[in-house]
Image (cartoon, rainbow, N blue to C red; front, side, top):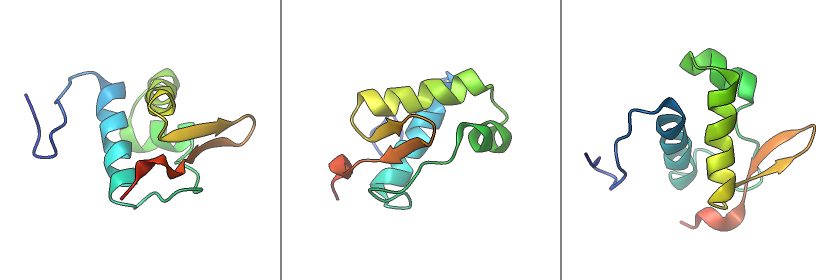
Length: 82
């Protein structure tokens, strides 16, 4: 199934979370240089496991939308365009 934004709907929680964060980056609710919500915040807000939140962030990192700073977390890159 495809959503209005052209993204595929996926039942896996990490993909749904990655899609949500990707949309926030695209909409510039999360701007380049800003930190993403922490893994702890994501687990609490979305009722998911830490591993699920981390997997979503690693997926976005692989896509070049965020980068990881060890000990500090994930930050939005300038690659989102817009």
